[in-house]
Amino acid sequence: MKLKYLGTAAAEGVPAVFCNCEKCVYARKVGGKEIRTRSGAIIDNRLKIDFPADAYMQALNHGLDYSTLDHILITHTHEDHYCVKELNNRKKPYSQKEKTENPLTVYGSVQAEEMIRPMLQEGVLEFKVVKAYEPFTILDYTVTPLPAVHALNEQAFFYLIEKGNEALLYCHDTDEFTDEHIEFLKTKKVTMVSLDCTNGVLEMDYIGHMGISDNLRMKEKLLKIGAADENTIFIANHFSHNGIAPYEEMVKRLPGFLVSFDGMEVEG
Ligand SMILES: [Zn+2]
Ligand SMILES: [Zn+2]
Ligand SMILES: [Zn+2]
Image 1 (cartoon, rainbow, N blue to C red):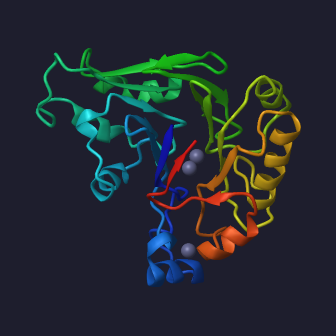
Image 2 (cartoon, rainbow, N blue to C red):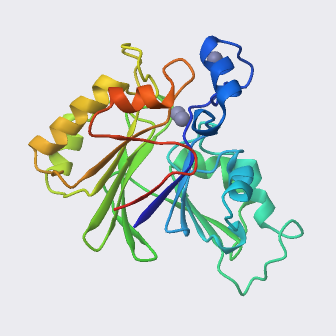
Image 3 (cartoon, rainbow, N blue to C red):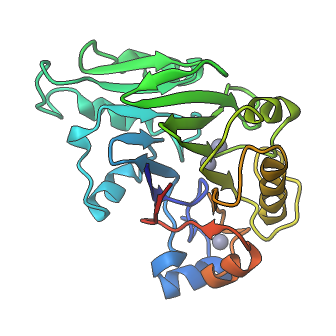
């Protein structure tokens, strides 16, 4: 499958929306890979993961057409992942798609469902509540939600997405794998792993996210339990302006990893 990163920042973006720290000044000056928008990705141009407000501009910048999009997986309700009001634009008169076409189906937690419920319309905009460790099918993908270590007042998920002998573990936003995650992952073989790197170069223990050393450690753990092997592609993604360093420095500090940037495509 082809994973395309559309937004690779944490909530405030890089440069952060209202910030003038050294890192944000640098990002504004240099541009290119140093500019990171809010979190989201798309698989094979047809399975969207998360829908921040930036998703619209990302579609324009990367030549995507959401009028053909029928499925969105939501990790959790933080605004950099779930701009729920935007989804109302799927309905008439904001979209003129006919009821004979596929509805847009959104998948996520009960909390995500509560937020979208007043907008739902059968055959047009639908929601499916998903549960941890209960796999479901979207198109030809088998998706298993895993309980994220993130956001105390809701059930946040990260996802294992399998298709044939390919499997993507998309881990945003979450902390280090728990023993329960490891027990589950022991039974799997993943070909691509995208790890939360919000804390970046900061060696801080900010609960609910990871940084560079955590990413390196989680890679070793997956290799050790046989869930990954030497062909598995590891990617660090979801960076905050506080934890980021210039792109090339991030690459040096993350040996054996790809470092995401907005627009990056990975096949695996
Ligand atoms: Zn986030
Ligand atoms: Zn800043
Ligand atoms: Zn979050």
